[in-house]
Amino acid sequence: MLLRLRRALPPPQLEAILALARDLGYRTSFVDESKEFLRLNGAGAAHHPSRFEDLVGVAAVLDRGGARELHERLSGQPDTIVQAHQARFGGPHLSLIAGPCAVEDWEHLLAIAKAVQSGGAQLLRGGAYKPRTSPYSFQGLGEEGLALLERVRSATGIGIVTEVLDPRDVERVARVADMLQIGARSMQNTPLLKEVGQAGKPVLLKRSFGATVREFLLAAEYILAEGNSQVVLCERGVRGFDSVTRNLLDVGAVAHLKKVTHLPVIVDPSHAAGRADLVRSLARAGIGAGADGLMLEVHIDVSEVHSDGAQAITPEVFGAIAQDADHIAALDGRHLTGTVGAPRSR
Ligand code: PEP
Ligand code: MN
Image (tube, rainbow, N blue to C red; front, side, top):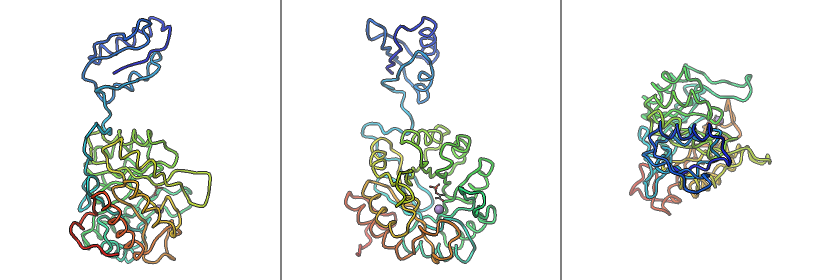
């Protein structure tokens, strides 16, 4: 590791840095005569750079050396492949998650599950616990919603992705879900991130609409640091200054993330667009930027949706997006899970 120290450091501040280095098992040497650059030699661990950043005498950690963070892609390191039920994300595999915004009732849930399953989805989405901006909006069916998800899983065989909002609910949600969703509003809820890090289930982590890419990666790091390596990142749009779309889909961040982390990255064009008529275009853009899959809000009766109705697409549009995704992925030798060798039609 290489540290840049503040100039004219008072001796106690310098001693604090050297003492921490010794405690963490590093040998230290100054690179320059003015003692501004301090080289730390030793094995290093993911949490060490932040320890030094917290010290008043350290201006910057210039090179983390072997103290890599767990999300980082080392040179030549292949993608982590995350598996959730029949879905595979990463490497050559793309998967699709589709379903209603919220679990509403049995009839709709079953019909949507069957429709998206036959359209190419490996996982059904649907919130039982909904993170709504207003406390007066529909908050989801809670435990009753979880029971419906469990029932639709056994009826159809499709895997389940559903959001957990409260650390106290993680165990209960993990009993039903094949993948735990952390929503945009919860991205920096560190007790929740730690809890899902220990839940033994893959995690779908959505980027907060106000988070930088670095903050997004450090949220993932919380989960990884608990020993859970099965994390999929989801770009769902950040807050922009225009209202033509609900959010701004940050495709640049998707392309960047694919370089700097080995974790799979998917795109949610539904919450990015906020309008059904743009979802297909944004889905294409996401896969084109390198995403390992999509999460889409689909409903069979778009006039009856309880939440996020304006962005719900029909199963027909979903089917068209699935075909698009397979075609675009094929440009760089990737494919939708379950379609290897299957004939492609336009
Ligand atoms: C969702 O996917 O159900 C959702 C609430 O989205 P976000 O957390 O991205 O707003
Ligand atoms: Mn929604």
